[in-house]
Image 1 (tube, rainbow, N blue to C red):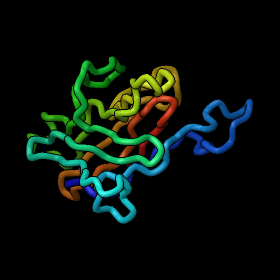
Image 2 (cartoon, helix red, strand yellow):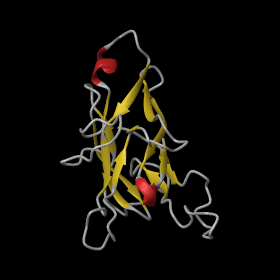
Image 3 (cartoon, one colour):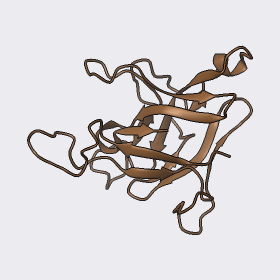
Length: 167
């Protein structure tokens, strides 16, 4: 089981200020709990959690007070993205299987389940765990998993609603 928190915010961390100079204002979803056992994990009395299995596959759900449930093994079809694998979230299989590597990229997609619904306002909810935002200063983002420390780090991209999600 994965324990801990993720943080969703815009690149300039100014999600509370909306003005002509801040096109990112008003976005970002705040804290995301990866397990109901976290202190103040949210989700009510629902038991939930994110899991990493022995083959490097992520599954299960996380909870965001402002974005709702996040699935780490959503059903496809998955969006196309530059340097993003069209699969559900997983540690890169070649790296995972190589005993000589310690830090591995996490590839694929997770999804806010509220995205793509009739009331989502066109937001699809997809979160890319590795990719490029071509033509922006945010190229080459990735979430990584350290096999020695068993910790995730780095950033995923959740489009203009969730923004950057820091692991």
